[in-house]
Image (cartoon, rainbow, N blue to C red; front, side):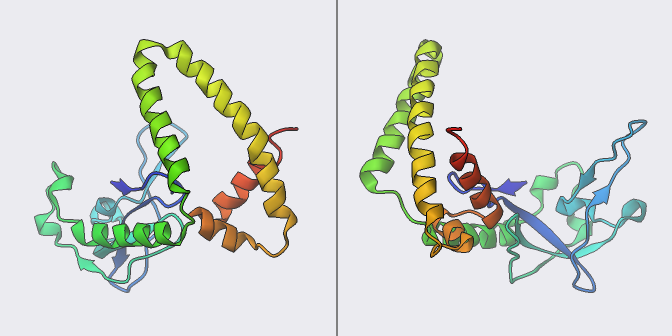
Length: 193
C-alpha cells in the first residue's frame, strides 16, 4: 500500500515500521525459489517476527523523500489477518502521510489557473479521444513533445544559469526531492542535443 499524489511523483509514501528499540529495520529478503534474484520487501506486514524476521512494534508514515511521521501507532499482531491485510487499521500513518503531501503541495509553486485549466482540458480531451481515435492522440502527443522539447531546455537553461537558485530551492518549488529535481533539469537541459 502506498500513497502518492498527481504531480508529486518523487513523494511516494506508505506505512513504515519501528522495532522495539525505536530503530527502523532494513528490507526483508524473501527467497522465492531457485532464481538467483532474491527480492526485498519493506511492507509493514513482513516485520511480523516469523521466519527470523524482525518484529515491528509500531508503525508510522514514511515517504521516499526521507520524511518520517512523528507519531507512532502500535501494531497488535494478534489482530492482523494474514488473508486480509488491508483490514488492519493503518489510517493513522495514512493521515500523517496525507499531511506530509499537503505540506509538499503547499510549498510547491502552483501553476497559474489558466494554464492548469488548459492542461486539465487537454487531459480530458485526450482521454475521450484515446479509444475512438488513438492515432489522433499519437499526433497530439508528438505536438506536445515538440513543445516540451522547445520550452523545457530553454527554461532549464534560465534556471541553471542563475547561481542564486540552489537545487534544494528548485526541488521545493517543483514539489519533488533534490534527486528528482536534478534529474528533471538534466533531462530537459540535454533534451534538444
